Image (cartoon, rainbow, N blue to C red; front, side):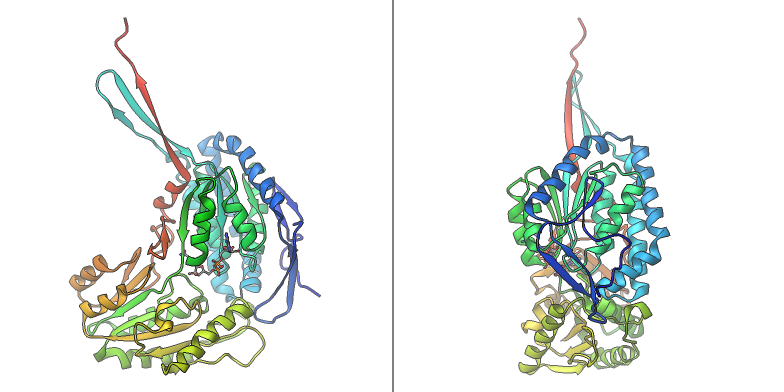
Length: 481
Ligand code: NAD
């Protein structure tokens, strides 16, 4: 008997109402227990069109809503999410497999995004540009239009809010497509948004896989596509968005380096590296999956990591262990494939390296040491709890190894020397660099990648610009006669 994790039958959300998908049925299982969850039906293309049409119809209403009122709706939505945090976190834990306290944190982050962007609704100022005595130009920051949000499965509710909150704050409207693996929380947020007073049609949700995402990204009337997912899919989204000539924000994959130098506080570095790769079972775009460490401290650091990692409890997400399962059987097979190939190529596996013999898609923390930088496991995003280490001579050598990657999402540096830290931070090819900490930035700091890790920035005030279009008005005011 499938377990329902939400209070209403899971479906699409179009024009402020639930609607069953008319496409193929999809089954889901709880990744910790492999027991079925409530199935759902995908949207057909016509329903994607209905969702876009409903967002387009709501646009003048929402864009024309007084800024203070828009802010009040977003604040109310933040409050509703916070009030329902426990229920939403349990949905997320059962659907994604993430430990309950991590799911609660994600829900809190979602509420915080709506709160943060509520504060900017009445501060979307333009500027005036003097053009001499007889002309004045002024600019308006107008909502960009209907925005599409195509989401991955690793942080479903917080990634939805990361794009939806600034879009709504700007007065734009939203059609979201969560991952086909994690559809529950987007549906719940859409319901709460209606309860918070968002006009019908300002937020819509369509469910389905890549076909539904591709139809949405390329739909006429879409003005901007915010995509979070793999680099391969990001390229396809960019192509699809060229049809409506929509803007794109692409938050893509990573293979992020953490550099630990000889003078680093090793205890702090071990904590940061551990959190960076084993949090959310390594299914984190910004995971610190490459440890680049000077020779003198490498072995001591790996020992510390192994010691700390062995103490991590594994179990059902609802019991809040340190490590839950991977999201799906396919993701488990992907991680196993990378590890088996690395072993076959003679890499040294210092920890983990084989799936756990228990029901569910559990994979243990795994460390490969002294891996050649050109190895597949050092270059490709595994998206699981798998760390590789590289030995380096000094900061310069570390920088060379760190930047030798197609990706450029985040990077970490551990050293007591501020000069070295800044020297590295300025030269690392990454959108965000952490010094003496890792993944500590918070959600009010701009985030996004360079190189194959993406285009554009989300979070903080930088996250608003994708949803605003500047209009300039030139007033000609020649001397009255
Ligand atoms: P994915 O690329 O497989 O899918 C992401 C979304 O795109 C899903 O909703 C999917 O249905 C949809 N999709 C698939 N094909 C499509 C197409 N042709 N057109 C439009 N949409 C399509 O990624 P995933 O497996 O869900 O997530 C893991 C990836 O996401 C990793 O690479 C990870 O690094 C990345 N990620 C990045 C960030 C970030 O902020 N940079 C955050 C989380 C995850």
